[in-house]
Length: 240
Image (cartoon, rainbow, N blue to C red; front, top):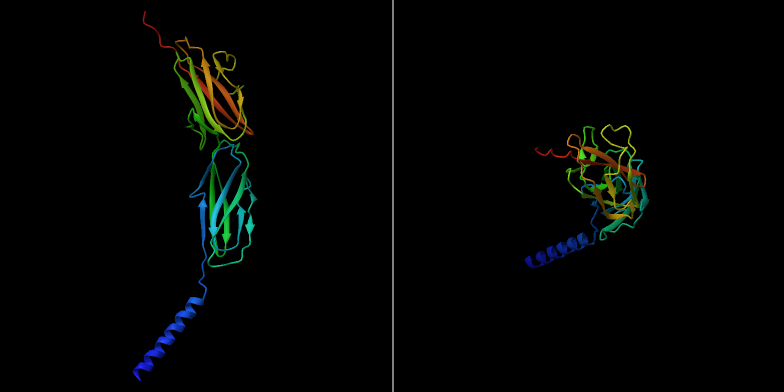
């Protein structure tokens, strides 16, 4: 009798195990791979992407007018708990001509989940020399290359996404900028291609012991213009 009870219990256990194995588990997930935790853009950058993983269909919604979804706005999939899909959606950005950093968000919706892909776009280009410096105006920067009076050469270094030009800026509303005399600053090239660039600056030494001098250059890439101050210190007086 005990043997029969044991056999019946074993059969019931097997059937329960078999049924549970045949039942498909519910797998749902939304995980943002890029940007993580957020994307960094410079003012002239106009494209990037969002990479994410999910088991389900999805749709993307831009929450800012300067961000557009150019490919992969939505996709319908046949749900399968065994298949985790990796998607890439392409974005385009308007150049940032505000001079300030701005924050934009793209909302990703999949199944019952929602996640945000966040992008910070600076109000300036990727100028590495001179480095950006904070100004008194909120959330803005300035570029100033401080040069000793005796220096004969220096450089400007930057990485841009489009062809660029460099010119003397006619900035009449800046009292510190000398726009009447630009003969003491010359640069070896006035335009170039996208990517890493270095412009060599040739300078005439400043012999004036009373006044420093400043000239402003305009670096232009597409719609974005950044001003670069070239400031040369006054000469050190010699002892008589």
